[in-house]
Amino acid sequence: MRYSGLKIFTEALTGNKRWGANWRQPTPKDTYDVIIVGAGGHGLATAYYLAKEFDIHDVAVLEKGWLGLGNVGRNTTIIRSNYMLPGNEPFYELSMKLWEGLAQDLNYNAMVSQRGLLNLFHNDPQRDSFIRRGNAMRFAGADAVLLDRDGVQEMYPFFDFDSSRFPIKGGLLQPRGGTARHDAVAWGYARKCDELGVDILQNCEVESLIIEGGTCKGVETAKGSIRANKVAVCVAGSSGHVMAMAGLRLPIESHVMQAFVSEPLKPVLPGVVTFGAGHFYVSQSDKGGLVFGGDIDGYNSYAQRGNLPAIEDVCEGGMAIMPMIGRARILRAWGGTVDMSMDGSPFIDKTDIERLYFNGGWCYGGFKATPASGWCYAYLLANEKPHDVASKFRLNRFKSGHMIDEKGMGAQPNLH
Ligand SMILES: Cc1cc2nc3c(=O)[nH]c(=O)nc-3n(C[C@H](O)[C@H](O)[C@H](O)COP(=O)(O)OP(=O)(O)OC[C@H]3O[C@@H](n4cnc5c(N)ncnc54)[C@H](O)[C@@H]3O)c2cc1C
Image (cartoon, rainbow, N blue to C red):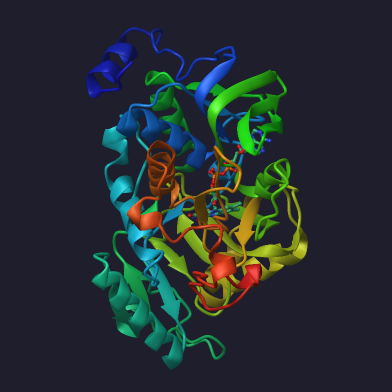
């Protein structure tokens, strides 16, 4: 079923009776070429690129609940490629390019909106470090523009520029940054996966891994055992739990992080803005709600709900740059379980167990990575070697000392 303007028009005239389901509900087969554990954005994107780019169609994506209920459907939808380090920037720029063509590629409106992402700075050293970041981005082919105070004021006249604690001195703008509709991304990939022959198995939790003689041969699930030539784990906040089934300990902690949506307002925020003196970021959804978030709650947890002190902290950040936000009421708040790696960067790698692969450690920034993560994981599964732009995302980097510590903060998840 292809979507087109003509199809919408004819369905509208004939009572919308011929829209089919977006994906099947297949019965699991006994064996697959590749099993992907986790139907979040990354798992579904991996299955899609495996089928589309590498002609590997005998693939199952196993999901313990319903697809889209993990972090892919819980995030604040920001996409950007404003990284500095060589191990990161080319990867995120590949992702940005894939976002730019995603709706056409999937024939699904992922609502990619390149409305511009502005990181505010509040003092001179911060401006200098943003100049450095902007230059690194431009060297890597990304876009970056340094705005002074007047430049920011032109875009956001209602910010509190003269706050005595956090005066706004300017910002680093990535015009191509913006947002994408998170659940549409999951649905769009799922629909295309299904079209290419991939089985999406919902309510099929992986309960253990079948490992024989140092090789992973499949999984035990809520729906019985399923064998596979390769097993690719991609479970975000559950990474530690699932990889422990193979006896592996990861340099990853699971933390809860919250997001918030205000009541709908008239259009006020043209782009995405981040506060430079604390954790706060905000955009406005097409329905009018301010979508915002901040820091992780700060303790290890698998719970998908958070606590009031973090809410207070996030709202204080918002009030510091745009005091008028204090008059908006929060409509909804929720939490997700984020897979915080110890240097703030992810992994896309083989493990020491034959035919067992791992993708995770996306911290609170993995939504923007979804297309490139899927692409590079599929590349690794198909070619048995890392993709060039993901070649630094190795599990052994903590052994060899090649951490990719973008913020230079060390092993401290709340600072990444
Ligand atoms: C509140 C919040 C805000 C965020 N904001 C942003 C943002 O603005 N920009 C950005 O880039 N990133 C953001 N992120 C991070 C981003 O959402 C995640 O990094 C990314 O979605 C993780 O990848 P995923 O989509 O594959 O994860 P998920 O959607 O969590 O997918 C993992 C799936 O694995 C399944 N699973 C777990 N265990 C098993 C098992 N045993 N068997 C089978 N299935 C299993 C889960 O049910 C889940 O569906 C945010 C995260 C949160 C929580």
